[in-house]
Amino acid sequence: MLHAGEITLLPKNTLHTDDSTAIPPGCNRCKDDEALDFDFSYAYQPIVDFHARTIFAHEALVRGVNGESAASVLARVNDNNRYRFDQSCRVKAVKGAAELGIREMLSINFLPNAVYQPAACIRSTFDAAHKYNFPKERIIFEVVEGENVSDRPHLINIFEEYKRFGFKTAIDDFGAGYAGLNLLADFQPDIVKIDMDLVRNINDSKPKQAIVEGIVHMCRQLGIRVLAEGIETKAERDFLVVSGVSLFQGYLFCKPAFQAIGQIDETAWS
Image (spheres, rainbow, N blue to C red):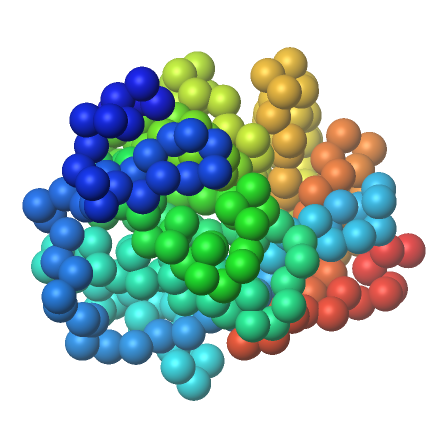
C-alpha cells in the first residue's frame, strides 16, 4: 500500500494525481503489450434518485459489440486475460460515458481477482478519466455480480485504495453470496445495492420486508446509501420508498440503453 509520504521513492514515471497521491507504473502481472482477442461494448442503465426525481448515476453494463448479452462476453474471460479485460472495461466505460455526454455519476463493475496491486491497477482509470475529461469524483467502483472473492482482506484493501484516490465504492448484490455483514464490518462503502431477489415482490413478502428494513436501518447507522436494483413494479418501489430507500435501478424506470443514455419512463415517477 502506498502513502503520500512515499511518493519520492516511486519510479520517475509514476503518475501523480491532483490530490497529492501517486500511482506506480504497474506491477509485473501487467501485460500492457498484449491485446484482448475479442472486443466488447457497453450499455448504460440509469440509477434514479426517486425523491429528487433525477438521474443519480448510470451503470456501465458489458455487452457484445452488437448488443449481445453480458454472459456472451464474460464467457470469454479466463485466468490469462482477466487482468487485461478488467483494465479494458474501465477505459471503455469511461470513454463511452464521456462520448455520450453523461454528466452524472458513472458506476463501473470491477473484478477483484484481476487486481494485483490496487494502486498500480487503478492507473488506467486515471489515464482514461484525464484523457476523456471525466472527473474521477464521478466514478463509482462496484464489485461485479457473481465474482468469487476468497480473499476478503484483498477486496477491502482494493476498496480502501480506491477511496483514498477519490473514487466512490459500492457493494453489489448485497444479501447474496460473499457480500455480507462481515464485509461491512470491515469496510463501509458509499453505496450498498440490495440484491434483486430480495426486491422482487417485496410488497407481498413479510420475510423480505423484514430483511430489507434491517439493511436500510443498518446502513443509515453506518452512513451508507442504499440502492434497490431490479425494480419492476410500482408496488415494489412504493414499499421501498416508505422503508427509506431513495435510489432505484430497474426496468420500471429504464432498461439498459446500448451505446446510449437511457431515458426515464415518466410514468415511473407517479
